[in-house]
Length: 339
Ligand SMILES: NC(=O)C1=CN([C@@H]2O[C@H](COP(=O)(O)OP(=O)(O)OC[C@H]3O[C@@H](n4cnc5c(N)ncnc54)[C@H](O)[C@@H]3O)[C@@H](O)[C@H]2O)C=CC1
Ligand SMILES: O=C1[C@@H](O)[C@H](O)[C@@H](O)[C@H](O)[C@H]1O
Image (tube, rainbow, N blue to C red):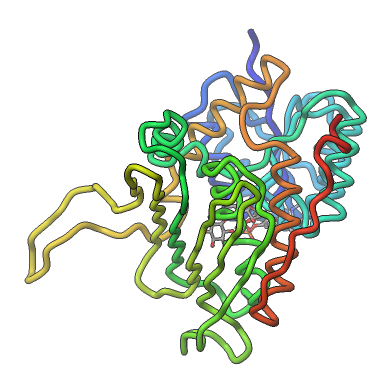
């Protein structure tokens, strides 16, 4: 079978990372085109990666999506650009791996779900890469095996070293906490019915008005619960942990099992600087499995519905952030939307 010809829209941090991944680690796929309003950035990347085969720079993202020699698309543009670009992928029948968030709000995410459903074919996979991380996947397998009994609680920690001053309080919910929203729905196998987002007195590392860290509680429709601390200016490094508590035991991932050193008066391991290091393997597995699924005319991971459900929870989370009170998630009836 011939290689899947991939075009990437948006080649900032994640888009460039995916481009390198396709060229260096993914089999059965070729990078053929990139598009970014920052054309110098796109040109530089295309030139750097063209040793493996020509990479075209297409100025207009919608032209890349419609191009006849692009079989499938990775959207790594900012979230605000996703809706229009997703509709273009659906219009051209192009399979798309869309970085999270699906779109910026629940209403437009639901429109995307409905438009895809009308086509009668799943073309959209959402980039919730933690589902592909070997540690998260092992935790999911353990919980699903029933060995620990029914899962009751999840405790999550999500810390970033630093984010720019423009990373506002609601972005902490929509861009960062959205990962735990997906993890909780996936591991606990239930929708989130209510979310409460609390914020302590913020760290002095953020500008006035930014609420960082945040602490959220999710009440799941099946009666289980999850909590998460999200702290995006932790200063120290990147740290993601998850502990599941079930009726007959608990299981924890994210403790960092790399090399432990003793040197210069310290004992311990290294902390990754960011998600590209911590979840490197997860992104590789995510993209490889997506490429293979596209070859079969399928998706193999979080769907447009998962992206929509996460957007609905985040919308309620942003509303809760201003009062610290629980907010019920306004989620469409899945059966009514998808039949
Ligand atoms: N799965 C994960 O762990 C992560 C996912 N992301 C997601 O990836 C996406 C991109 O984020 P980053 O790479 O961190 O951002 P970035 O700011 O580093 O890069 C975004 C790129 O998109 C370009 N761009 C701006 N408007 C555009 C448009 N209308 N069409 C096409 N390109 C456009 C910018 O010029 C820039 O090169 C976002 O959806 C973000 O939430 C980001 C970081 C980690
Ligand atoms: O998706 C991501 C970023 O957009 C977000 O800003 C970070 O907080 C997350 O850790 C990372 O995985």
